[in-house]
Amino acid sequence: MNLDFSNIGKRLQETRIQNQISQKYMAEYLNISIPYIRKLENGKINIELEKFLKICDFLNISIQDVLNEKNQNTVKYMDKELYELIMKCNLEKQKLICSMVKLLFKNQVI
Image (tube, rainbow, N blue to C red; front, top):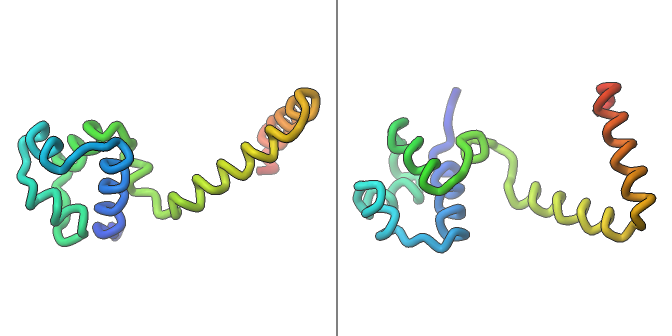
């Protein structure tokens, strides 16, 4: 399995910034250097497994989310779009949508 360390670094950086965590604080907390974090976030180095696990735990992000090749912005957009469409429906229609989705999963249609 080939890993794209550039994308991994970007995802870790995005999560760190979203959580308003500085590189300095993260470095001090995890006992790693700021230059290491910079190189990691810029995809200049391959991350060691032990440090990767510590960073994911610190940032409260799943390893799967970091390694996922899907464009996270697209996923967020789709989540938002679906949510907005459902919220436009009355409660009865929302229940119907939920029932339909459950039925589709039950019958392995989706």
